Amino acid sequence: MIQVLHFADTHIGMENYGKTDPTTGLSSRVVDFLRRLDTMCDYAAQHDVDLIIFAGDAFKTRTPNPTYQREFAHRIRDLSQLAPVVLLVGNHDVAPARMKASSIEIYDTLAVPNVWVADEYEVRRITTKRGDVVVGTAPYPIRSRVLENIKTMGLTIAETDNILEEQLIHILESLAQEADTYGETPRLLTGHFTVSGALLGSERGIMLGRDVNVPRGVLADSRWDYVALGHIHKHQSLNHDDMPPIVYSGSIERIDFGEEGDLKGFCWVELARGKTRWQFIPLSARPFVTLKLDLRDNPYPTQTVIEEIQDHDLEDAIVRLQLSFSAESEAKFNEIAVRDALKQAKAFFIAAIKKEVEQTTRARLGVSPEGLTPIELLEKYLISLETPADRRAELLELAQEIMDETNTE
Image (cartoon, one colour):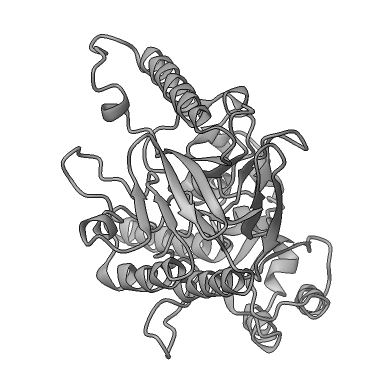
């Protein structure tokens, strides 16, 4: 069995819900991602890895700053000293223009030992300490490249997408055919794209470019022994217990609350011709916690929220509160006390305290607009926009001052 590490979507540079780390000077959220990488590198070393597959999206953007490049390079250097490393180009890595370099191309330019930057659709035989592996690579499908020799002028977006999908399917079939010429050597395909039926995660919010879907059946091909995917942040296996395993390793760290309940980690693969085994290795990702309370009929809203905070383990978590109030209960709410309670609970970061106030409009607000004063009309309009109560009060007060000045004149 050949021991393979499969990971993806490191997205170094994500800084949301972070603060400056005093030790490194980096965003604490960037440090989170780097720590997950370090834990993964330690696991690979302890378990004697033979081959390392990174399935794309090293950075948050296509133009990462030098500090982030340096930190990622440190980890790739450490991994390359353990085993051959394949760095697949994802949509966050690739430059949109043909002649421009990707954010990870520097490894090829410097001829970094034991590192292959996979920016083309191709098949290679890689020698590891436990034997050879055939690796097929399918980087993120850039339309201008995949459709380079195809006339698309005058076609609709949908028609162009269909042609792109057909071309990508043809390319993947060609890779499988070539891999099949290597006899009984174990074969692995790595790709960075969306597979039909995959459950999406927060990548939708940070996606660069329009996506193309690859039918799952195209990858469920016995000519491959494992399909290592990146691009979708939610870890999932798409081929159940059938061969070959078709697996999104998922991202190594949570990006936002859309991934609150998702496990984060990497895949450890025991690769063999026709009998591959694999497992998901979870990482201790930063917790995201949402506390949602209905306080509309609660006479003690502050105490209720504090008790809810005390009932949860919020240490080192990124926390948001979603609170529903009536006008009466909102007036009794002490946000400062709640923030103090979150600090005492050792929450890492307070993402938001969102207050939704249900307005009990006065009887007169229910009559026709003709029966309302301008201020009442404005109040009704602001309520319809769900303007926060404190902001609404400021606007109404300002409007009243303007009207008073006008009436005086």
